[in-house]
Length: 188
Image 1 (cartoon, one colour):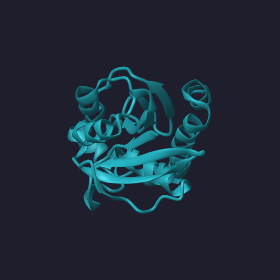
Image 2: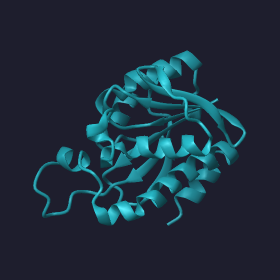
Image 3: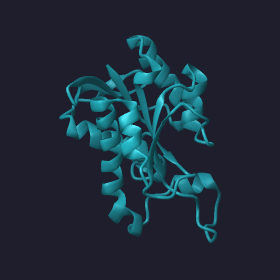
Image 4: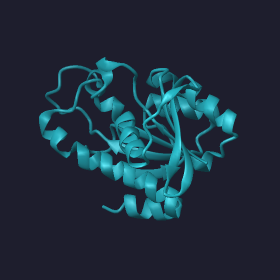
Protein backbone atom coordinates (compact mmCIF):
# COMPACT_ATOMS: atom_id res chain seq x y z
CA UNK A 1 0.00 0.00 0.00
CA UNK A 2 1.06 3.57 -0.66
CA UNK A 3 0.19 5.99 2.13
CA UNK A 4 -0.43 9.51 0.79
CA UNK A 5 -0.56 12.39 3.26
CA UNK A 6 -1.62 15.94 2.50
CA UNK A 7 -0.54 18.54 5.05
CA UNK A 8 -2.65 21.45 6.21
CA UNK A 9 -4.66 22.84 9.08
CA UNK A 10 -8.23 21.70 9.83
CA UNK A 11 -11.30 23.90 9.81
CA UNK A 12 -12.94 26.48 7.56
CA UNK A 13 -10.64 29.31 8.70
CA UNK A 14 -7.68 27.63 6.97
CA UNK A 15 -9.47 25.93 4.06
CA UNK A 16 -8.10 27.98 1.16
CA UNK A 17 -4.79 29.13 2.62
CA UNK A 18 -1.33 28.62 1.17
CA UNK A 19 -0.45 26.38 4.12
CA UNK A 20 -3.24 24.00 3.06
CA UNK A 21 -1.79 23.27 -0.38
CA UNK A 22 -1.21 19.68 0.76
CA UNK A 23 -4.88 19.21 1.75
CA UNK A 24 -5.99 20.73 -1.56
CA UNK A 25 -3.72 18.46 -3.62
CA UNK A 26 -4.77 15.38 -1.63
CA UNK A 27 -8.43 16.21 -2.25
CA UNK A 28 -7.68 16.48 -5.98
CA UNK A 29 -5.91 13.12 -5.94
CA UNK A 30 -8.64 11.40 -3.91
CA UNK A 31 -11.29 12.69 -6.35
CA UNK A 32 -9.30 11.23 -9.26
CA UNK A 33 -9.17 7.90 -7.43
CA UNK A 34 -12.94 8.03 -6.84
CA UNK A 35 -12.49 8.28 -3.07
CA UNK A 36 -15.07 10.32 -1.22
CA UNK A 37 -15.75 8.53 2.06
CA UNK A 38 -13.20 9.95 4.51
CA UNK A 39 -13.59 9.01 8.16
CA UNK A 40 -11.86 9.97 11.39
CA UNK A 41 -8.84 7.75 11.94
CA UNK A 42 -5.19 8.22 12.96
CA UNK A 43 -5.90 11.68 14.44
CA UNK A 44 -6.96 12.69 10.96
CA UNK A 45 -9.35 12.23 8.10
CA UNK A 46 -8.60 8.94 6.30
CA UNK A 47 -9.86 7.04 3.28
CA UNK A 48 -8.78 3.93 1.38
CA UNK A 49 -8.81 3.58 -2.36
CA UNK A 50 -6.89 2.59 -5.45
CA UNK A 51 -4.59 4.77 -7.54
CA UNK A 52 -3.08 3.50 -10.78
CA UNK A 53 -4.10 -0.03 -9.73
CA UNK A 54 -2.33 0.17 -6.38
CA UNK A 55 -4.04 0.22 -2.98
CA UNK A 56 -3.61 3.57 -1.26
CA UNK A 57 -4.46 5.29 1.98
CA UNK A 58 -5.29 9.00 1.85
CA UNK A 59 -4.66 10.92 5.09
CA UNK A 60 -5.22 14.52 6.13
CA UNK A 61 -3.85 15.00 9.67
CA UNK A 62 -6.30 16.99 11.80
CA UNK A 63 -3.69 17.71 14.47
CA UNK A 64 -2.76 21.10 12.98
CA UNK A 65 0.39 21.44 10.90
CA UNK A 66 2.94 21.54 13.71
CA UNK A 67 1.73 18.20 15.14
CA UNK A 68 1.33 16.31 11.84
CA UNK A 69 3.85 13.70 12.96
CA UNK A 70 1.43 12.34 15.57
CA UNK A 71 -1.15 11.50 12.90
CA UNK A 72 1.33 10.16 10.35
CA UNK A 73 3.13 8.07 12.96
CA UNK A 74 -0.15 6.41 13.98
CA UNK A 75 -0.90 5.44 10.36
CA UNK A 76 2.67 4.30 9.65
CA UNK A 77 2.70 2.10 12.76
CA UNK A 78 -0.73 0.65 12.01
CA UNK A 79 0.14 -0.34 8.44
CA UNK A 80 3.83 -1.06 9.15
CA UNK A 81 4.37 1.39 6.30
CA UNK A 82 7.81 1.49 4.66
CA UNK A 83 8.95 5.12 4.43
CA UNK A 84 9.75 4.80 0.73
CA UNK A 85 6.02 4.14 0.16
CA UNK A 86 4.89 7.15 2.19
CA UNK A 87 4.24 10.32 0.16
CA UNK A 88 3.74 13.65 1.93
CA UNK A 89 2.36 16.59 -0.06
CA UNK A 90 3.09 20.00 1.46
CA UNK A 91 3.53 23.69 0.76
CA UNK A 92 7.05 25.09 0.49
CA UNK A 93 8.11 28.72 0.84
CA UNK A 94 11.50 28.20 -0.81
CA UNK A 95 9.94 27.24 -4.14
CA UNK A 96 8.35 29.92 -6.32
CA UNK A 97 4.57 29.78 -6.58
CA UNK A 98 3.33 27.12 -9.02
CA UNK A 99 6.54 25.06 -8.83
CA UNK A 100 6.06 21.38 -8.01
CA UNK A 101 9.05 19.25 -7.04
CA UNK A 102 9.45 15.72 -5.74
CA UNK A 103 12.20 14.23 -3.61
CA UNK A 104 12.90 11.63 -0.98
CA UNK A 105 14.22 12.61 2.43
CA UNK A 106 16.15 15.80 3.07
CA UNK A 107 15.72 18.69 5.47
CA UNK A 108 12.46 20.35 6.35
CA UNK A 109 13.30 23.84 4.97
CA UNK A 110 11.43 25.33 7.93
CA UNK A 111 8.17 23.48 7.11
CA UNK A 112 6.99 22.52 10.58
CA UNK A 113 4.66 19.75 9.44
CA UNK A 114 7.56 18.04 7.66
CA UNK A 115 9.72 18.65 10.75
CA UNK A 116 7.08 17.03 12.96
CA UNK A 117 6.82 13.98 10.69
CA UNK A 118 10.60 13.60 10.42
CA UNK A 119 10.87 13.82 14.20
CA UNK A 120 8.21 11.13 14.65
CA UNK A 121 9.23 8.58 12.01
CA UNK A 122 12.49 9.74 10.40
CA UNK A 123 13.14 11.73 7.20
CA UNK A 124 13.16 8.94 4.57
CA UNK A 125 9.66 9.54 3.16
CA UNK A 126 8.84 10.87 -0.31
CA UNK A 127 7.82 14.52 -0.54
CA UNK A 128 5.80 16.41 -3.14
CA UNK A 129 6.68 20.05 -2.56
CA UNK A 130 4.16 22.62 -3.78
CA UNK A 131 5.79 26.03 -4.15
CA UNK A 132 3.95 28.95 -2.58
CA UNK A 133 6.86 31.42 -2.78
CA UNK A 134 8.09 33.81 -0.15
CA UNK A 135 6.24 36.94 0.94
CA UNK A 136 6.89 39.88 -1.38
CA UNK A 137 9.05 42.73 0.02
CA UNK A 138 6.00 44.93 0.56
CA UNK A 139 4.23 42.26 2.67
CA UNK A 140 3.44 43.52 6.16
CA UNK A 141 3.60 40.68 8.61
CA UNK A 142 5.68 37.61 9.26
CA UNK A 143 5.94 34.34 7.36
CA UNK A 144 3.18 32.74 9.47
CA UNK A 145 0.80 35.52 8.42
CA UNK A 146 1.73 34.92 4.78
CA UNK A 147 1.21 31.15 4.76
CA UNK A 148 -2.11 31.46 6.60
CA UNK A 149 -3.57 33.80 3.97
CA UNK A 150 -5.58 32.67 1.00
CA UNK A 151 -4.13 32.62 -2.47
CA UNK A 152 -4.47 36.02 -4.17
CA UNK A 153 -6.70 36.22 -7.27
CA UNK A 154 -3.74 36.17 -9.66
CA UNK A 155 -2.49 32.90 -8.13
CA UNK A 156 -5.96 31.33 -7.87
CA UNK A 157 -6.21 31.32 -11.66
CA UNK A 158 -3.18 29.02 -11.81
CA UNK A 159 -3.90 26.98 -8.68
CA UNK A 160 -5.92 24.26 -10.45
CA UNK A 161 -2.98 23.53 -12.73
CA UNK A 162 -0.58 23.41 -9.78
CA UNK A 163 -2.80 20.97 -7.86
CA UNK A 164 -3.14 18.80 -10.97
CA UNK A 165 0.66 18.65 -11.33
CA UNK A 166 1.06 17.66 -7.67
CA UNK A 167 -1.57 14.93 -8.14
CA UNK A 168 0.14 13.83 -11.36
CA UNK A 169 3.43 13.43 -9.47
CA UNK A 170 1.83 11.06 -6.94
CA UNK A 171 -0.02 9.12 -9.65
CA UNK A 172 3.21 8.68 -11.59
CA UNK A 173 4.95 7.52 -8.40
CA UNK A 174 2.23 4.87 -7.94
CA UNK A 175 2.46 3.80 -11.57
CA UNK A 176 6.19 3.90 -12.37
CA UNK A 177 8.12 4.46 -9.15
CA UNK A 178 10.10 7.26 -7.56
CA UNK A 179 12.82 7.84 -10.14
CA UNK A 180 10.41 8.15 -13.06
CA UNK A 181 8.11 10.39 -11.04
CA UNK A 182 10.99 12.65 -9.98
CA UNK A 183 12.36 12.84 -13.52
CA UNK A 184 8.97 13.92 -14.91
CA UNK A 185 8.02 16.20 -12.03
CA UNK A 186 11.31 17.98 -11.52
CA UNK A 187 11.90 18.95 -15.16
CA UNK A 188 12.06 22.71 -15.44
